[in-house]
Amino acid sequence: EVQVLESGGGLVQPGGSLRLSCAASGFTFSSFAMAWVRQAPGKGLEWVSSIIGSGVSTYYADSVKGRFTISRDNSQKTMYLQMNSLRADDTAVYYCTKRSPVVGFPDDYWGQGTMVTVSS
Amino acid sequence: DIQMTQSPSSLSASVGDVVTITCRASQGISSSLNWYQQKPGKAPKLLIYAASSLQIGVPSRFSGSGSGTDFTLTITNLQPEDFATYYCQQTYSARAFGQGTKLEIK
Image 1: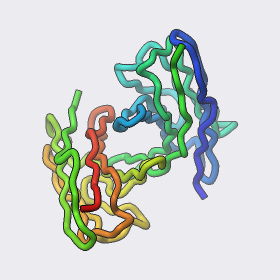
Image 2: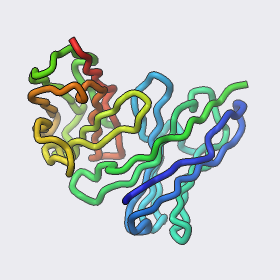
Image 3: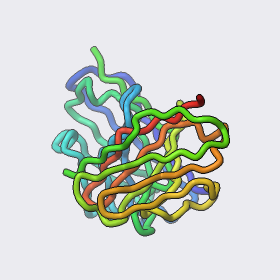
């Protein structure tokens, strides 16, 4: 059974840092692109960042470029999101997603999410 | 950046109804359009990919159509478990979601 499980969320002060992890199981992790999607309280979905299976190529939304870094350790079947210079508007539930290779490249599996709160 | 606009933002319907949700892209995206369903407190669930392909396990009352800039999600014979928020997502250039359509019980 495919599973992705996020961890690492919590309360952090503005300007602080946090690292999220996403542990994967049930599929050949290194063969699939992965992504982070976030949802601010009461708001819609926002794509944050993606990484291809090898980890060589990464992509970021303009809102986090230069502050967040996505990475993965295929030997540990884990993806990470290093978040620096956090702001109040980064407060959200962060979802880890597995990307399907079919046409459209949809996010076919999602974790349950981890909450990040940026507040003093 | 490609912007995605869904309409309506909210919708009231009854069990057994047919509902249609529209998603418009700010520029052509071919068929690079996916649809998701999200229930309160839960992660989104993939319904439709590549504009019209039904994800495995999703009931056939869900269907998608469109290409280019205009897309539609149709739900026939609405069931109680279908009341949720629906999002479209373009994957043609980077990624972007529509703002969501909340489907409520009338």
